[in-house]
Image 1 (tube, rainbow, N blue to C red):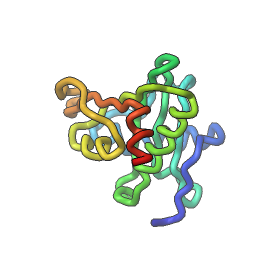
Image 2 (tube, rainbow, N blue to C red):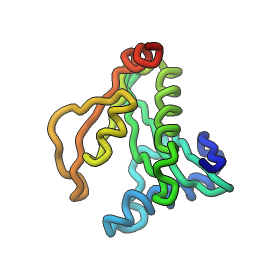
Image 3 (cartoon, rainbow, N blue to C red):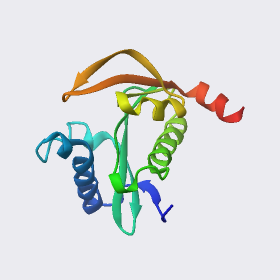
Image 4 (tube, helix red, strand yellow):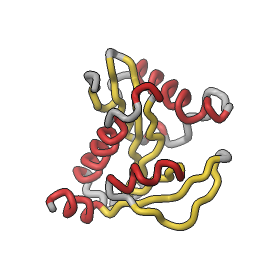
Length: 153
């Protein structure tokens, strides 16, 4: 794997680069306009990026929904950087941050084709699949005490 650094967004330019990378991965393939990659929670969320040679190649975000519940969203890795462990590193870092914040549960909305990726990280499906942006999704959650225990086993 190339030299990839996973870390929080460091400045406004990198945040803009992250939004562009997110749009390229998650919205452009659906024919959606620039701007659709953002929502009203960006300013209150924690943004994490994977950077290679000063280029944002992966990103994800964690948002606190309550003192005990966090939401992970917008996990995205550029196609040419997939299958190198970058998504896993982003998720592991967000889970680590959730532990530091003493969250009990993390939830996310997964595209159905990515369910097994999240299962490997300790998430399980909740409810039935549904369509969002014409793509099949399912809610998933992870009880952090369980993932801690599994990490020690």
